[in-house]
Structure formats: structure tokens, C-alpha cells
Length: 66
Image (tube, rainbow, N blue to C red):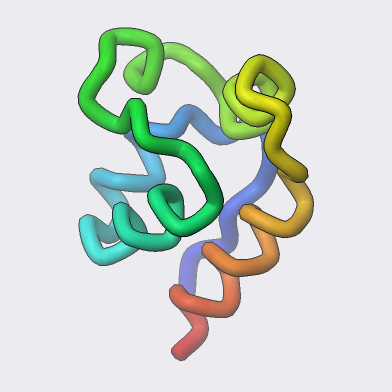
């Protein structure tokens, strides 16, 4: 099982498992198709959007573990 970390690029997580997209969306990360998603880490994107990165990472890891 893969584990998501804050320094991972958003698109890499989506490539790892496309079913993570709704998790990103539920946490306010609606820009999954924008160019920044291909080069921006989860932590950086969360900082820009005012999202708690640890809550998102925890939710992504819980989803991947299920």
C-alpha cells in the first residue's frame, strides 16, 4: 500500500489512484486539472488554498488503506 506525504505532487497521487480525486475535492482542492497540480506538492497547494494539509493527507491515506 502506498502512503501519501505532504511533499508528494498532487498529480502523482492521482496517478497512483484516481479514486483519490473525490477526497481532494471534499477538502476544498478543486483545481485537480490545473497545471499547478502537475508540479505543486500537497503541502504547497494546501497553503495557497488555506486547507489543512494534514487532514487531507490523513484522509487520503485512510482512503488508500481501505
